Image 1 (spheres, helix red, strand yellow):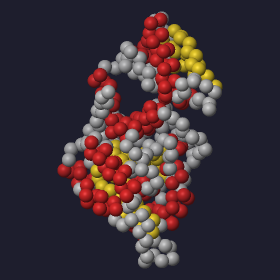
Image 2 (cartoon, helix red, strand yellow; image 1 turned 90 degrees about the horizontal axis):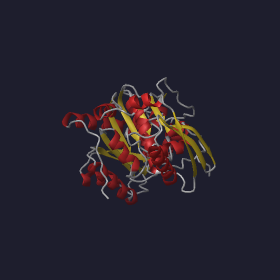
Image 3 (cartoon, helix red, strand yellow; image 1 turned 180 degrees about the horizontal axis):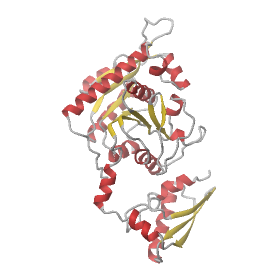
Length: 377
């Protein structure tokens, strides 16, 4: 399997310069990067001759590549001297702690509310809920963004029918694509449909950070984060990078999904993120030719009962209907394609409850702060 340049950059972004406490990619020290099969070659530009530092950085770079990409990779590093780098480093890496903190505080500074849509496991329709939630809120006149943080399996491009690549500003920031009134960003916009993202954890979390820090989001009333399933790296990266206003947990009624949904609620509790409520998706099946019939295929009121047990709001149930699947596959969420349908009305009511719950939360509680997670050996 051939190694891609972006994989190498992500791996080298884990290597910190001991003087400036910033990674080599941010400092612009990695030049002339070449990859071919498992062979990697690049020049490490330093502002002055320093054999001890050069030796350390070369070892750290090779270790990062073998750890995060491929233990059998062949790494060829050339040390170059570029005296003009000194001024760049003083401006880029020489920030004091106060300046760095100020910069971090500016992440999503124009966004009033950041809402995470999460699920304990995959296959419960979380992305469908996130897409319809974003469009429903945008239809009220609010400025809404939707960030697809599922790097391995992005669904938003298909659900919004977007295949073009986003533009880049002169400041090298990504410009979200606007569709159905929602500003969209997804890894699916940047890679080919058939390309698999075979990345290790640090590379994925680095990409998610870039989506929050290096995107021209502008002024938004709501930014909805479509999280991947589970309670792992990406979820922790997000709560460390940006203060979440609240989280919505999606589940089906069956016990297998509810067990994982319970873990999702517990995770947000541990990192002090308010859970706005639980949504029960695929609550029952309704045949198109018999709309009065309800078949509880996955169990009855499982998520509703879980919400009551955990003492969190129950935001509503979404039936399993073919029109929701068809509109998602065709690139137009049901609330935009057929807002007066039973499914469209149901999803719009849930979006309204989310906004109401969020308004109450903002009135009664202070702003959420990003957290500092320390891993103990």
